[in-house]
Image 1 (cartoon, rainbow, N blue to C red):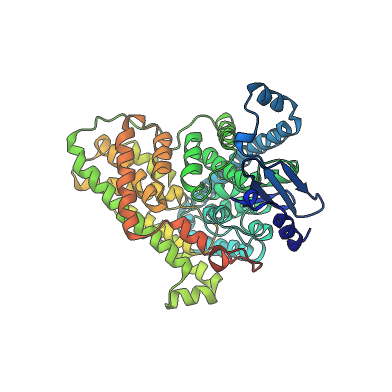
Image 2: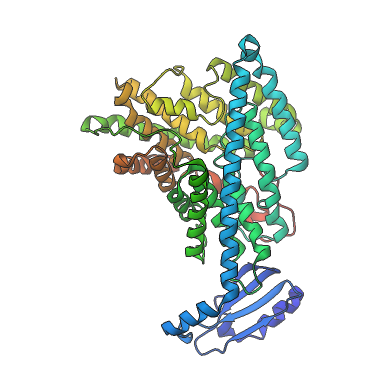
Length: 511
């Protein structure tokens, strides 16, 4: 069925029945779903050989409300149960893929740490190792894995927020991109770059779950939008070992313009992926267990200072990331556009130098330094926060696949430590401010306060500080919004041609 035939078919439907029409993606391409006006007869027109299906659905007042009818429909709807089984199976597969990603990434971090400890040679090895591996990874990315650059969250947001052709969407989210993303991010960690794997798991999970669409029936109402939301949030749940954080992430970050229609199935998929991670990796907390601290009135002033500083620093970080990829009329942006491999080598060399100066405390996601701070051990360099901030920005600016979630937590922990030092607090007394910094910087850089608050609370087992963590997240986000719009939305807009209009023009290369 051609576009013209599809339009002609719609024109045959009464005007009242066409009110509220909306475009959704179906198994063969595009599904036109129209809710009929009261009194309109049910009409289903389909052509399985075409890319279009027109479905006119009865309004709720015309459908049976009897519990018996509902039970009968559920029992006799064998195919819809099979569709649900397919989705849940892919949720389990998503959890397994994220667990594999986690193990591979941790092995890469350990390998780089082992190399950097090989005596005098190991100390200076990153000056050659990091730039060489970064150039190789970027060449592979540009040649064979377009669409994997950056954290991957902007790609998922663009696929959800903007209507686009199926071919365009596959440039942003697909199973093939997910597998390539895993390898490239692990390679970046092996190089010693200041990147994380948690953000990339959003794109990885979305690509795996999207693949389930080809196995669903033609009559299934589970569309690609719901699958991408479920996969992206499942990736967060499994990566951070926080199922509740995944659910909140889906609601706060991935449902701005349209809610997911199969909310129950989406939530179950997120939880199942998280349970797979818990079953295989254990119910661990990445930063240990936060020691319960008595929050007194004396912490109000330094706590507010942490929130404001995190808001300013997080807003600046977000602005730097967007500006770096958008480009300015300066020599650096021009050189990056003309010589991307040489520019990546320069960024990687700078990251290697920063790593040597910090004793490799800035390399990788930052789990070890952050955990040490939360345990009351402060053996980091005095300029750790600034060095980690610069290393993370340069790693992202290089153009390689790189996540910023975990490095943001490390930067925030450093801010909390610095404010505590200025306030004359150290050891266990500084731990609450370090936790405040983690949630503050993450919420300010992503402008997702609920997601940041839940993730940090579950990762550090900080249930005793629920209200204070929430307050810091809200204040930091408010300050950040004074400086810059949401980072992921801005980056997503760069991926879509003509301001998000459906166009046959290929989308731009993701940053």
